[in-house]
Image (tube, rainbow, N blue to C red):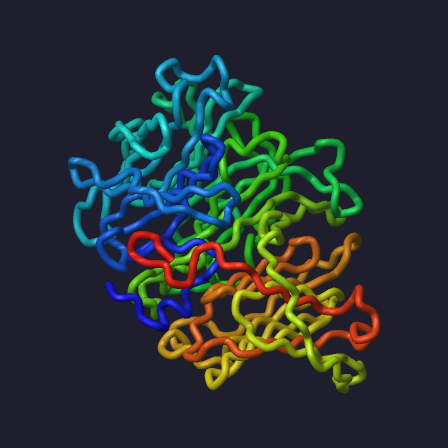
Length: 503
């Protein structure tokens, strides 16, 4: 399909998008052969959900992606390749890896056999193998469907203490936990979540991972301490407030027990879904990284792009931070993101204005696209201007973040989304307060303080970006260390991305 001018203006320059047609969930994320592999749900035939395969791209730095041929496709029975995960058994399990899986990687994924409408399937879990991550042997079924309509998205990992594999799997309105010693024979050992305080809907795309806990300074890890975190997503086609959630708990290889009854949101915006972490990251990196689909099932098939549909968020580094008796999830752009800063954009103005009883300073930067905006302090307003289309405003007060898209003409997209949302910000007793906003094509991401508040929205203005206005405390005009910084980001995907990945 032809790439229109609007399509290309909305296409991010540094967030991953497929060359063309439909893309949704990331899946099978793994570091293998000294490269990051990103597989994703992909219909190679049209810009709509349908004939789902695993698309594939590889990168040396999490941002500069090179397209690869399709990975796992529709099987001989017409089974679609839904979301799943990948692992390198020999790298994580050593001598405990199955003998026939010690060369290459393994994927566990949902094979969905069509039985009716385009979204009515019988779902079962299958295993596929690859020696190089590019060419895959056809999958074999390892877990049959027990009579549950929505039974999908296996995330598999290695539990070193019990010397066994675990799989967390979404099963309608709860999660199932399986264990295995050979990746083929799986035993159901736990079912949980049905009594948690989570929104109603279909549960999807779980992940179960160990995260480092930051120390009191909010920066360094505390004596190597880690805790288990379970994440999941709630699909609700009529409720755009449903999304991603997490729970901190204890995991012994066969059961997961929350240490708090509170289910917390992962991202406070509308467009963060199906997040998955990379497996097999080198130990020397000392980090966990994940990425999500920047969209929402409630309207993902009604986005205004035509030649391509779907973008990923920035890759985010994960950790936990202590706040009182609670452990909070922290997400910040992967460290490689800052290496893409081309040069600071020069602000003009610095004009003092009266806002209620507080004096503030407004800075203006021309050209808003592909920007990373950092504003120190716990109060600010960032206004993204899109010429004749109007504005998107991000306002932070002491204790609340508001993202308002109602002042921006986004055509028909404005009629199908919630345009304004205000969320409470966790009060942090340590660390520096700051607001960080990334605008890249149609993706808007916000990160507050040490990453304990993240917010993702899509924007499709009918005119190109023109200016950025930042209003912050008046001291910012006189003290460089508290002044806003606006950086132009280098393109890694290419604004003219074509059908074969060319730019």
